[in-house]
Length: 161
Image (cartoon, rainbow, N blue to C red; front, side, top):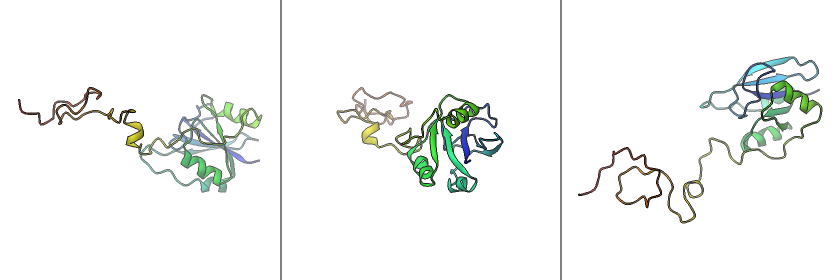
């Protein structure tokens, strides 16, 4: 039987499934027949995530997570792994639900883009009129049209008075 890899917030089977696959604090590599597991440290937020091909070498067939972006999802699927959405569960509860067939593998990632992807300014920082909704820096008099959120902090050059 293939092993399960659970993205986890802790290093025990009673830990919660992590809400972020790529930056889980721990990964638990679990043999579902014996429930024996190996703890694999996760990566820090600023670290590069190692390649997933090493998981197939360890016999992983199923991945349990709370969310997964398109890059990680594609990489796991290209390695032949099935990914399961297990939000709000402990690792042991998620393992049991997957073993029992209560959950189906995901067909697509749960996030449209990675949480680290640069966002398109035209889509995320403007309204339908094209005016920016970002914070002004206080350096241009009258440029905000009243839609900024402030936070200029008074460091602008100021205008003639």
